[in-house]
Length: 285
Image: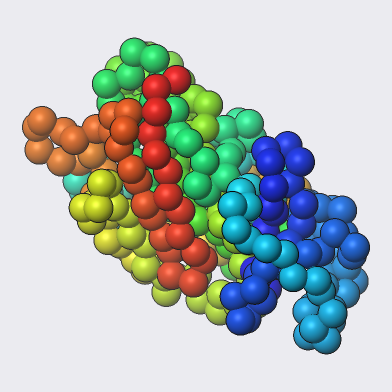
């Protein structure tokens, strides 16, 4: 299934995109697309049954904002330097273990919402990523099979980053990763049953129509299952939590001088195979 949330920010309603591309209203069945729903197999079965029976009312998508596909996210866990190509382009050694950092849940916005360039920023960068959405409480998982069984689905994420704040201002990466609007997510949460192999997905990103990133999840240093298993040993993952799994080569930081960092007025578009497409216009904060 392709689950999504539509409507004004803070007042989104649950919806489903059916196989014919029609937007369907889920409001009569569920309150929201969130952790409590994703952990409830019977509720998901009711949605599948209603979709199969063709009884869900259609929504007019004209002018309708698409919000983040998951509401009330508890935390966003991010994996850095998780593609061989990206580690190489930034001149960094391949990590021996996953590089883990956190983004605040309030950085998450809709897939086509405005992204704000922070005040004083000269090095705002792009990163297309595959996002994992957790569906069952995960702690101390031991096998890749267990890890995959705890995934509700997948989505497109844009891990926007400010490189000066991240790298040159001391401390951890947090200052360059947690600026407002720095995690567009969606358009859909595609349930795990429709993504049989998360290591078989292409990722692409364009800036002002120019292709900048053209990668593949097969280049991940730590595959999806290993990432979930690993993170579960250091923190409890709850239904509705999101894991951004890293970005392929092609970011501005990895390009020759003068590096083409993002500026207000730029337009970024990105997609992951089968998971939909995003488009953001950048403006000044």
